[in-house]
Image 1 (cartoon, rainbow, N blue to C red):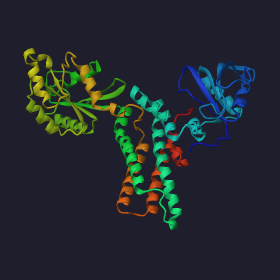
Image 2 (image 1 turned 120 degrees about the vertical axis):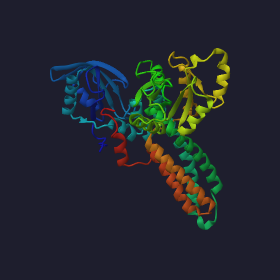
Image 3 (image 1 turned 90 degrees about the vertical axis):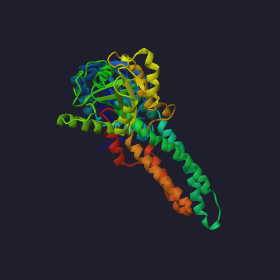
Image 4 (image 1 turned 60 degrees about the vertical axis):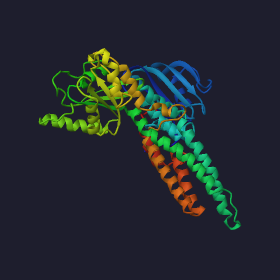
Length: 461
């Protein structure tokens, strides 16, 4: 369980484990200046201005441990909302451990995982949704995941929830007031007013719920399966996308019998490509296993690239393949080996295949032609533009589950209004939605939730 005792002054190494050029130790709490002053030779840190940096030495009695820079943040203008000091030193593990031992001897307590951010939350420097985004910022590996996390940390998501909650809370107050004057037969708010607010909330929450799938793939990486008949050029395409000879290529059908996976970054989004065994009718037991696994991968993919040899398959063959695959995910039809087509017939052939899907991409994986166009099409299939602007894409499973519960509660109220249920019962469902919204931002929470959330953090954050 996280230590939420704010009477302690806490300390921790904030930089990642291992040797580095620089290391940072953070100290936060009411005795931060007193404790650090006792081992720092330089200026009296209590007397310096906030948000300033000072040069000096950390000493154990007369022994110099290291030459350091000390950053000073006085409450409430700090990350935690408390007096906070960051000591920048050389990145030697010996130096960092020596400094930590000194701080602990002088009265600091070892911070638990996430305790600095927990204090920021308890001191109202961040709401709970923003605090959770701190982990996502640290874990972000791409431009897209970083953008989502930064937007949430800055309050993009929680501000929308708070705004909706305030509107519902105002109306709920009128409903509750009306119940207090039940004998007077007065009406402070109508079911129609409630329905209008719920329509607005439902619309926004539904978009948030819808964004979760996209948020998850942007955070974890987009799973893309390359599927098609044997010798369509799937392995060559994978190599072209990766710009590396990752897969063995051959003119012999069935060369790929198991999965070959690799990851690339396209416009700030992580794509996890899977090259699969060729789809065919085969009596070979190994090939049968490979094909069964391919179909399993296809069913789990976020996007499928259906690749075919444009010199071998007719548009009817392509339609039949797509029908047989029963594609449930988003898919891109890719016509390979287009370099072999007679120039005079290019227009006619393009027209024929585009009748199947207007977004058919014509490539030559061997000569890496139109690979850039294929990458752009993959980005387009994600529909990222739908969630552009100030809206924050939902990536947090806890938030997603609560949003689903909110939609269920709204449905219950809609049913209650249709059935002319009394307002005292409707008020119970309204309070349920208000509580659910409060759980997202941390206005309503408990120690168990805090322990689960902040326990995911690293020490020193």
